[in-house]
Length: 147
Image 1 (spheres, one colour):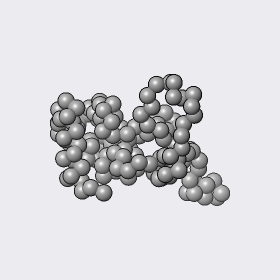
Image 2: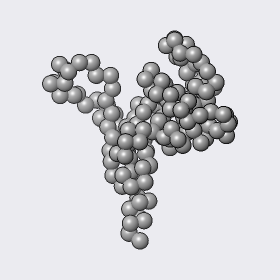
Image 3: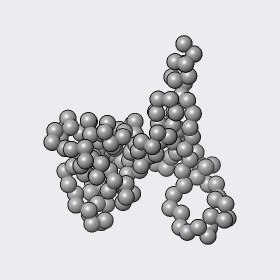
Image 4: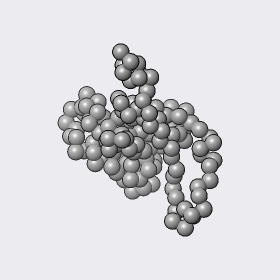
């Protein structure tokens, strides 16, 4: 994996090449996502960012996340409760989501990546990405239910 500073530099270069301004808020949102392991929602990310940027608004965080996801600089992970969570994808991966506590775990599965899509999808248009999302209940939640 690249160092954080190298990834931030790459992010800034990507922003410029896409015609996006490299603002302090955008860099800090990206940095916080880069360091996160929990796929935070916008409100959780806002709480964390307020420690460094006390004046940042939740609206700014939402708009920044929307822009960065629109340009493919971050990934938006949809959850069963329709709460978008976000990540910086450093390697190709899929998601396992607990329906009880909402925890999201990443997993890598080359077999899934190599599966050909059905022929009828070829006439649909241009497919940019394919992901698998697996839903279930994690061990911690199963253990709680047993007690």
